[in-house]
Length: 233
Image 1 (cartoon, rainbow, N blue to C red):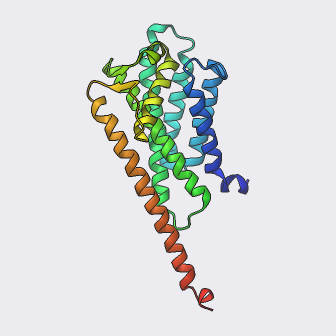
Image 2 (tube, helix red, strand yellow):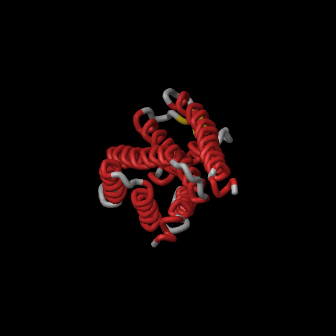
Image 3 (cartoon, rainbow, N blue to C red):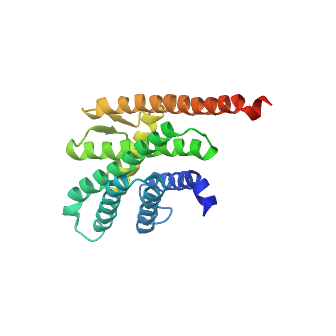
């Protein structure tokens, strides 16, 4: 159990990378739709268990987690006419969960005085969770302002399905966050035209601030060790 706690962010990072791979297939070719969604639900449960420790945070995260799982499951049994409100509820809940998780990880980094390898992996987890949060924000924008993104021929057919839209928006979000971008899917209407470059700014800011904090904590720790009586003797 202690070993799992020491490597919790490594476990979470592996889960996030696996789910990112599952998300990239718009028709869930790897595991099938139901098993893929169960895998994603398990990942969100893992986020809840690993990231949130304070009672107030766990309450908010628990509500968001339960809402997302219920909404994600109901769309299998309700007719297609109910898909729009379910998409709205699902992506709002996931945005709250993963966005809140990214903020909590950032807070924990700034409270950290001893930097371990797992803490660095935690920062990477926060980065990927932030990408997921921006993706869900783009999904909500597309719901309220249809046609906010111009999609190339290779991606157009994917927007016809629930999972296809998620795959496309994850692609957009990761491209913007890493400043790689792509001409295949571009924002053409506000607020997407403003938020997409803002995500790129956020991605650069995240890396700069997190790296600076981790280096500062490391240097502070080394300074304390060098200044201790044992180090002088």
